[in-house]
Image (cartoon, rainbow, N blue to C red; front, top):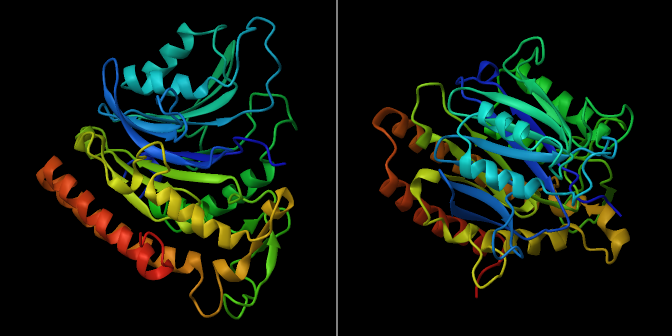
Length: 395
């Protein structure tokens, strides 16, 4: 079975992006495939976060951003020695991130939180953080130790970005996992950087939906494609960025120093990324989120439900063994009517439309009521897309 929490991530400094704004990306792999987005009122700040739908009380957050422009995510690091000091419960990263979003405004605030919990935290993780002052860093964290990697430091991050999967550079060498995904990501981001294209689109579309494999040296999307969706062609998906347990993806696009933190944008993909559209969210718009990302009556958010329904077409073989085998023809084919091809076309137009609105607010100031009106527009458009293209949501 695939390990839980086998996530991929990147922290990108504003010095490496075309517009000077930092980026924080997490591609989430987990056994909790039903995710939604929730609004929280914290100790100091309100915030938005991705949560597991079955976590009805919202006790843990797996990626998010607050009204101060502070944003955080994590990947599990599996190559730290077991602590001889801390003997308490582990896997507390979700609780820590919720606490950080509630009380932290800057990268330095989060480091202070780590200092205060030294020897008393149940975490073995790489935490990625950005803030509204241009801060960007990874913290490789065990129960009684942490190490900071400043993405703004050219000696630490010569290209202006860092990547983490499921090992820590400060942990035990050659242990943990995600080395193949790390190499794949490194090649994708290097190519994007050379084109001057380290953007939310490149992370969500090129990295998060990549069918490349660095060890095998091939890309299922670039080879000889099936003629049509009906010409079944199974391919294996072990050690790819995208996998059966990919449950959500998010890029937080921060602000330049001096810009209004309310413009921090959470580009959010809920559900299986090959089958889910991406939409922008803003903490400053408040608690009235788009219906398609919100769980109702403890059921999956509609966007998650539609993406999971399409995922069944992508992985039609039953049982655990079937989780390794993707029907490539359903996803991408020569006729251009694969699930991913339809999703990608709509996503690119949606992103262009949303960026235009965001650029207008950068000139005039963030407008909460306009954001809510736009949410309604997105809800209608997304529902219509899944009904028209895939006959989902007709009920």
